[in-house]
Image (cartoon, rainbow, N blue to C red; front, side, top):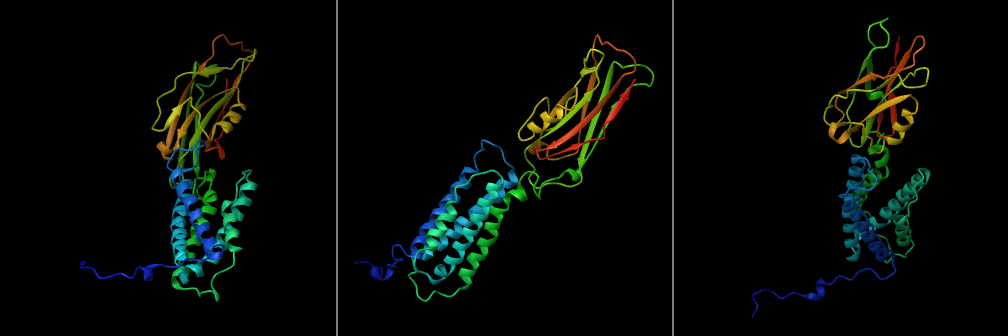
Amino acid sequence: MSVFPAVDRAALNVEGPSAGSREARGSLALKALAALNAAGVVLALFSPLTPVATLLVLLFNVGAAVLAVVYVVVAIGLDRNRPWAIAALRPLLVLVAVVGCCTLVAGLAGGRIRIPFDVALAVWALLGPSDVRPAPRQSARSVGLVAVAVPMLALMLFALPLGGWGGQLDVHEADLQAALSVDCGPSGSGIPAEVNLRYDWSWRSAALLPSGTDIVVVGWTGADADGHPLYTIGDIPPNETGIYPALAGYPSTDMANAIAKETTASFRWAIVVDEQQLQPARIDLTLNRAPHLSLTGPQSMVVMASYIHDGVWRHDAQKVTCSW
């Protein structure tokens, strides 16, 4: 004989919403959305084929993870015909549809094609007839769940303009302080055997979770009568953590290549921001006078330096002209 009290199993059974109703469709739609969000969070743990800003990934996936929990909670409530879940369903689906449409439009404006699964699921559920008449009133729980969903949906919608490279939470060109100095040699002594360059930079403000690859490009103009550059690359002193000479990196490479075409010769350094962390830094470079120059009359060389931040913007230091 069992010592445990008898349990009325029939009393524990909860009849769910009827097939095809708004509540049944809503439960399926929310579970599907939760699965999509959870899958996106898991995929974010792996390195993407095309790097993106770390802060963008964090903001987007925090919103996706919290929303997945909200969707599952409401879906389970719908399966059990809880009034608070039924009351929360309609405003939640409307929010999903509106934000999904905004995301679709923003993607098209940016040249990205996105299949609006969220909009399709929300509209499909909303078009189903409700099982419940009259509709339950909003309760503290239903209002609270919708209130949690609103900022999370907004966080996913605005993750790019907030956390993307060049976004509101990133550093901008006005935050960079940079200067180029060049030792042109004694005045009136002719073209020196070497010219020493120095490029310093620092930041007026910081960024939350800086990432990506910046590039510094130093270029110089000036050629002899035959069109040969007056100076070639000489000594490259070792650099600080996260600064790598003669390297390029996404997403700044294209802009660096364009800048290099503005000069006779150039050299570049890749700044791995995840390592360098936007700390003040300095780059040194020695240029050697090219051999066998064909010189006629006075000569001059213009030196320039540009800092490229994640392929979004460039900052040009004051150019320096050496005349001999």
